[in-house]
Image (cartoon, rainbow over all chains, first blue to last red; front, side, top):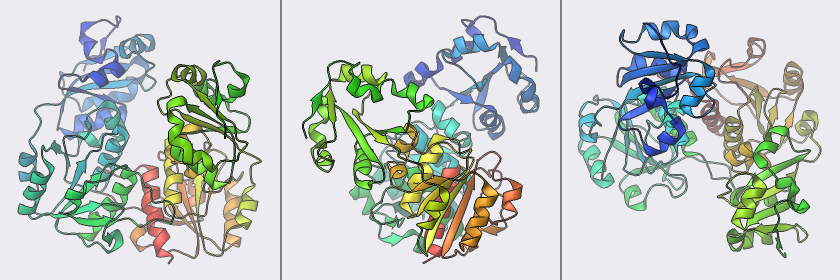
Length: 267
Length: 267
């Protein structure tokens, strides 16, 4: 690995890093940005996505020696002084470690379902549009060994820079796929033998009493409106009991409690 | 309640709202900023802090009619057009609802301890310096009926604007106090009959097997370093079991799981 020094913020070799914040919103043509050492290690280790290049602040390079040893020998590693790096990224990059990954072709939900083992825990997200929540849910999914995450068409992208960062790289590790039509997807899970549980403040069963199934799908909806009634009617609804007068739990916190519960209630 | 129209961003009556982001960092002399309708309602309902004034975008005023009916009759309600409000706050205020609250005199930890009932669940925070985590922990504390939160001297301020917002107002509801010296505080809890549990990845007991006590203190430390060994040696340590190869859980997610567990294991 021979680091390549970048002296000019307009150098075409680092074009993918230009104005990172602006580009997040506009999308980036099949690429994503990984930030920080832990996320970079996950990108290189997880083997789900390929890294296209790395851009590192010059004083961070030594600390990445062992991390970059695990990278393919031909992975370009660009190094820049702080001032150049800030001008490339378009804001002050105090972390100083960036990488560009390639998304590759999106896997259809059906194909991902086919890869799941006989004993499987999956998360189904409907309308999760906040990148913090998305990242946190992926982090919890990884922490409790979920096999995959499935997203409806109204969810935000787990490979958005902030979602990856909040997930501490779990978005690069836990397989995910999008489905187009929720009721059809639910029917497919039924056929595949999944017990289907939905978290809802008005759930019929307290989660402590909810007994898991060998194949288990956990549905999570948006905080405000929750999962649509037409969907809840088809699922086993589970609630997390709370103190009176405060029935509000963040969806990521709820996912932690539910995944913790179901990761064990199936053993 | 007669709204007072503000036409000039430099009007001294809205001086407390000037350049909100900058002032967050500099502190604001015993005041805090509450943002959004839900948080404003919590401020007015919780009675822990007094509101000094409210600043509302003109098109949001009608929607606050019932909220402001609950406010003291002499609470100044300032109304501004979008452009004026943005110039006051120093950035684009799309939510359009702000209030200034007074912190009042800080309650000593000992005084707050004296108010706790015979059966009590409290949270003890050591080194929680991230406002997102602080806000989320307060939200979870409220959701699971914790009676109070105690903070060591290295924790950030729960009344920072973002912490209040993330807590959805719980930071204005759940009583809290700071202590100066952790080991001394731990000894005081001992004398008061608290079972003291610390979450730690290397905890001795899996949390599912941890039986709560009638008076229970849950200690949470920073994500990176965790609670100091000298402290862990004095407490019952509890771990949250995770999937192999990913032993990383956000401290707020961990607090949700632990509070959910202990809120019931004591009944």
